[in-house]
Image 1 (cartoon, rainbow, N blue to C red):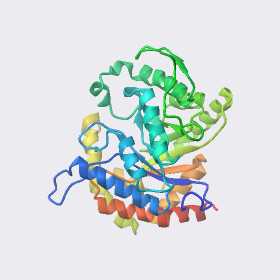
Image 2: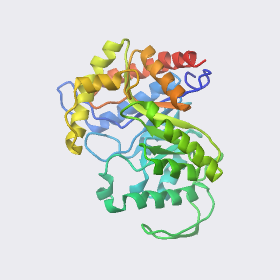
Image 3: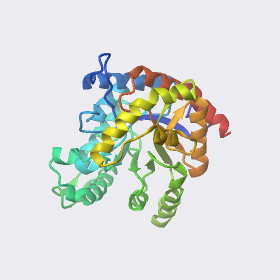
Image 4: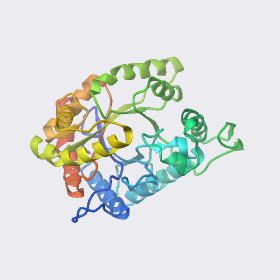
Length: 349
C-alpha cells in the first residue's frame, strides 16, 4: 500500500473534523449527509492505500461528528486495511473507562485496526455540555489520562481521584485480541504535554497548524530525552497539518482559499484574532509554512521537508477545510494516495 509498505520512512494518513460544507443552494449540509460523505471519503482512502484515517470529536454546529467511534465503526465495515482512529478524543470531558471500551469494541469490529489519539481539544463546548468546570481543565486531563492508562492495561484497576468515583479492583471489557490498544497523545506545542506523553510512553502527534514545522524540533528532542528519563522505549512521532491537493499549485490554492478564509475568520472572530488575508494564506502555503496545499509534487516536497527537519515517521493531512466541497476532497484524497505517497517515498529513498 502507498504510504505503508512502499518503502517510505513516512506513513501517510488523513483526518477530518467532519467540517460542514454547503449544498448547491449555499446552505449548510445536514450533519447526517456530512457523516455519510466521511464514510465514502474513508473508503476511498482505503482503496488508494493510505495508512490511516482519523475522525475528530467536536460538539458544535460547524462540525458534524460528536461520536467518532460510531463513524469509524461504519467505516470499518466498508474497508479492509486502513487504520482507524480519533483526532482527537477529548478525554477531559469523557469517561476513560468508556473511551477504552468504545475503542476496544472498534478494534474488534475492525479486526485490530483501531487506535485512539487522546487530547484536551482546541474547543471547549464539551465541558459545559457534559457538566465539567473549565477551571479544572488541566487536572481533568491529567487525572483521566492516569485512569485511562490503568484501564488500557486490561488488568484489574484500583484508582481514586477528584473528578469521579473510585474503582476498586474492577476490569473494563472487552479486551483486545492482541496486545494493548494503540494510544497516542495529541499535542499542540506545550512542553508539559510532551513530557506527560513521554511519562506514559505514548507516541505523540504534533498539531502544526501555523508557522514553520521546523520550530517543533525542540519538542521532538524534549520528548526523546523525557522517554529516556522515564525508561520508556521510543515508538513513533507524527505531525498533523491542514492542506489540500489538486493537479496544480494554482488550482489547489484557488480551490482552498475561500473556504480556508471563511473558516479562519469565523474562528478568529470567536477567539479575538484579526481578519485573515490572502497574504497570510500564501505565507502558510509557502514551502516552510504549515499549510500543505498544492500539486502532488509540492505537497510531497513539504512532507519530505518536515520529515528531514523533525525525523517524524507519520504525517496526517487534515483534508477537510471548512466548506470545501466533497468532490474536491475526494480528488485530494485520490491524489494524496496515488501521487503524493509514492513521490514522498522517492524523495526520501
